[in-house]
Length: 238
Image 1 (cartoon, rainbow, N blue to C red):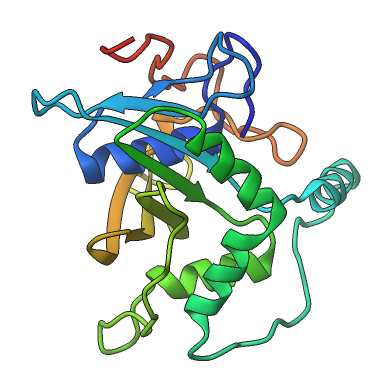
Image 2: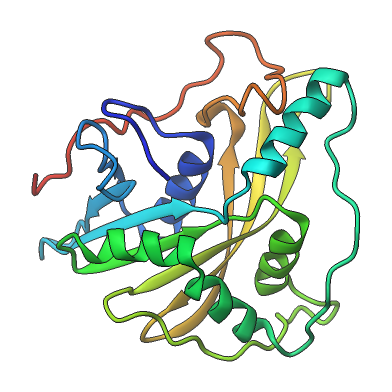
């Protein structure tokens, strides 16, 4: 994604950052705040004393037409839904991922990562369309036997260490529905260039996230309730 100089993390970025922080044990700072749009979204230094630096770009397939349609639906008071069917493509999940990573929009984001010095370069993907989410859910969900759907290893572009696919999110209300305090349970699939596929489940407090896009949905919480993390400081290595 692209942030203007001095911008704060978007909701999508903050979800990605918090998920990665839980899995990797890191502290992510906004890498492009004040640095223009040619920088990746986030950066960190591993707390292991070895000064290993990681960077991440958070992005999704282009969805301008879909976002406009959702905005029109909200303005008209209509439900924000999609309909239609998609090919199952059984036993082809790795091929689907390869096609995603080979698309022009993905290559542009990969090139942005490769242009920066880092020990690890991560691409974090989320879907806006039903078709995209369907495949990402299948990468991270478990079947009735508690096992993930088999998927072959990927061949990542040289220099890219990890690709994350944001899967299904479930809202776990730990208080009555008329009160605040929602927790999001998020499933993730991550492919690491050396160790292969990993599946993760993380918990994210909605209070720690920025408000949703106001053009798509109204924020139901009062002003000042949200307390997103301040990520404006530069990483320790500058």
